[in-house]
Amino acid sequence: QILRDADALVSVEDAEEEVCELYSVYYSRDGHERLDLVDPSKTELEIEIEGGQRAFVVTIGQNPNINGELGQTGAVLWNSSVVMSEYFARKSQEGWNLADLNIVELGSGCGLVGLSLHRLGARRVVLTDQSRMMKLLGRNIDRNRLAAVSKRDKVTEILATEYVWGAMPEDQAVLREPVDMVVASDCVYHESVAPLLVSALVDVCKSRSMSGAGGRTVGVIGQELRSDLVHQAFIAQLLEHFVVRRAPVSESVDRVYALYLVWLRE
Image (tube, rainbow, N blue to C red; front, side, top):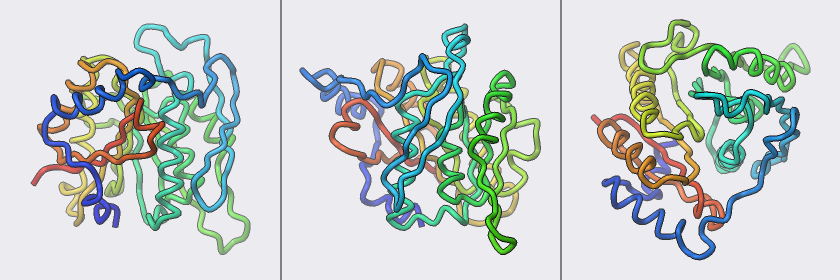
């Protein structure tokens, strides 16, 4: 269903060419004006997600005090998580049936993307990050968890668990069921992170075929444009393993943000 849209996307075949195309706009006179969708200084935000049949609000707790510590960037929201959440809201309105999907999010941070997928009706959402993010993620899940209105309502599953990239997840709940979609929002902030994230994406995608399930896992990856060298390194790593397609969002967003659909090469 999701891959049927792939032919309408921009095919990415070479990392250097992709960066030249993206950053020629980014480095233009007004191309790198930042989006202003979140406030990292607050301990709690109410984020309105638009683009679907009805807008909805996700309440997100943040921890500005630990953001910026060595290796710690996920304790506050970034613009990219709002962009990706609204992309999913719009695609669900256009026909993506999230209700059938088991989704794993990598590098969930405060959890906005995974929580938005839950609110949009995804059958099962597993949010993953480092162990020190679990308490914050758990509180944000409790703030936003959907409850059945009647006994006939289908209760969707959402949980958070630790996943250290570079090895298969220790918690079997992550890959307990065949994964339909894996998502990652703005996880690459340094070249050293790129191979670890790509390794985790490969592991999650391969787990589906190893389980004997048919079909393939689709990755949806969003990245705010900052360093062209870091972005090129990331795309080059992706292209070693995945077919990569870029999904245009809007003129204002595409100046500073890139969103990709990926799936393993055959």
